[in-house]
Length: 245
Length: 149
Image (tube, rainbow over all chains, first blue to last red; front, side, top):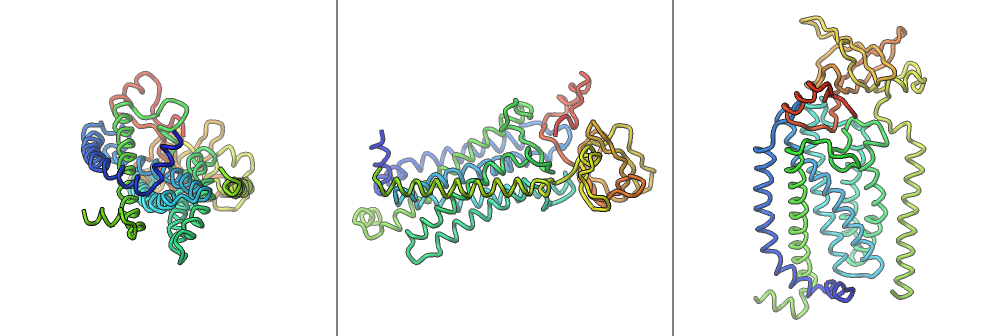
């Protein structure tokens, strides 16, 4: 089992596996998004208080979930990169940071769009949920910056991995911010011990969209790592063969 | 795992745990500052310094909203179930403002103990449901608005 796992960390093997999976994953993601968006934006009923405006949760909530999940994946890859010096893990840290930053920006942006009509404000600095999510964006950007800050890219990767690991403390803070402190942001609807506080007709499309976001992340992460491998292994013979087709 | 890898793992874990402990202590020390708003009970308990501008959050008490037609002035009581405070506000109210709704206001207490608000924000709760379900809940005597937040 462990041997099969370590074999995966060979860039060449990973490249081959990613190439085989990508077409299927891409088609599945595209179809899934079409179904999920139709389900959430058209089929699901309006909310009793917010009317149609609540539908932004079908993008906002999955982006926010992914912003946390991607960070956890990134920190895990960072640990592997630090301890075992696995090249593939170093690449994964960087690509996770790119994607995670986008998910975080999307969560912040859609949240602001919803906040203005519903709360009456775009942004509140004093709100622990908003502030901790903004810090998450800075952490991602910091990882990207450190990664690129060294002439020796492998050294940069390890320094960035340290920041990725240290920043993991922000993940539980974001999740529990709405419970630990009084916030303008509402509490958790789905990820809580009680049963979810959304009606099933709204909950299912939300969970479906969440799954599709995970699928999208996996697909794009694979595609990005695949390109990065080819770039870094450009002087190897197998990479040369791949390029020639 | 060889000795060098074990050492690196130890170091990585130590750094993460150290940072986490530092942040935890910091958050603990700043706990009061991280409160986005105070509840009427916290105000009653004297947690707010007099003459300071602060945020007050709670539910708009039922049958407490007084607004003259054609006027921007509105008076209502803000409650958290245990305590309530009279609020006076002049300005536009957000769409979700209604009795029983959770709101957050910014302002200060005057000598008469009335909270004079300069900003009123609506707080949405985590409950999402179709209108028919909300109606059914209301009929069953279980108000869907502002149950928990």
